[in-house]
Image 1 (cartoon, rainbow, N blue to C red):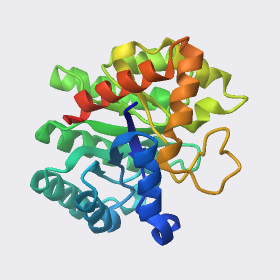
Image 2: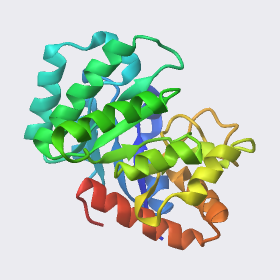
Image 3: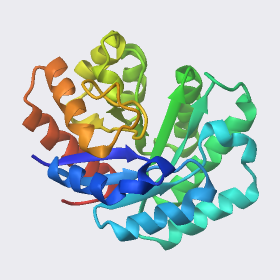
Length: 261
């Protein structure tokens, strides 16, 4: 079984004492590819170093919407520069909108739209974070499609929307990625969405070190090896085998990020 974890943050301090052991576990679990997402430019050098240390790890560059207050022209130039110069950069992000913990809509939107410009210029997909903002994210992406004549490529990461919202983004050409939240007992809405996503638009992730899946939910740290539990739950809600979901989501991720296994 080959698995592709499409969203990790293994540069965080919580991984530093035993990162080699964490890597050994993800390899043992069958994880053959990972995409490291980015929260802000201060992380660029550490993420880049990890991507060149571990051949199976590619990365994205961007600014998280909750850090949109740090956005400026220099940030955009830094993102563009690194994404243009390092072939291990396979996406722009994570970007998007988050109104669960913040309400600086215009600031977030401006940063989001600039990420879309960079992704379009470089022909890279975007990794979109969307929390309590599905309608607003859809509006931005629809506006972008109307202006450019085609949708930007990308993934709705750690997706938590209902089936109607899920369909909005599938119709815009986006992939939908499910994390450990799909294993949570009360996550009926997420499970319904996972059941209805088109096969060619389905992805999985850990978003580690956050959101450890059942049966590891009580642990303080999630890690890439636990992607197996996400694959197993997605298989259950779709009435498919875990092997089939692993194969399908790995193929989809390779197509989105321009990678091979």
